[in-house]
Amino acid sequence: MGFGARAKMLVTDRDVTQKKLAKQIGITPAKMSNYLTEKNEIPCRVIVGIAEYFHVSTDYLLGLTDEPEPPIHINKEEKVLVETYRSLSREQRELVLQTIRLMGEQNTRREG
Image (cartoon, rainbow, N blue to C red):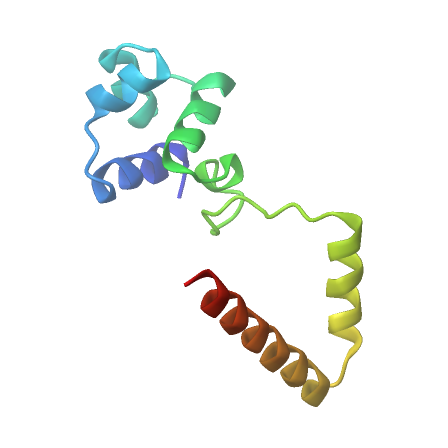
């Protein structure tokens, strides 16, 4: 599925008019229509604008991935945690998940 099809699907699924999207991005509705029907090549700034508006990745819009969510950026400490978690046995990973759930519940109780 190409850019035009994915962008049109987002417009339809999220109940947004092409006119409103065009206004948000700073282009005319006619240009937006031409981009969505792939009559004209779309500039990078418009791709980025549509991605930001719908909170999806540009890779998703361009058909490079089927995952609409932008990748999560993690810091070095988080990367070490993920790598360590992946090295654990299935039982150990389950124990880690149970501990995290318990901590989350404790935090919820404190906040509430």
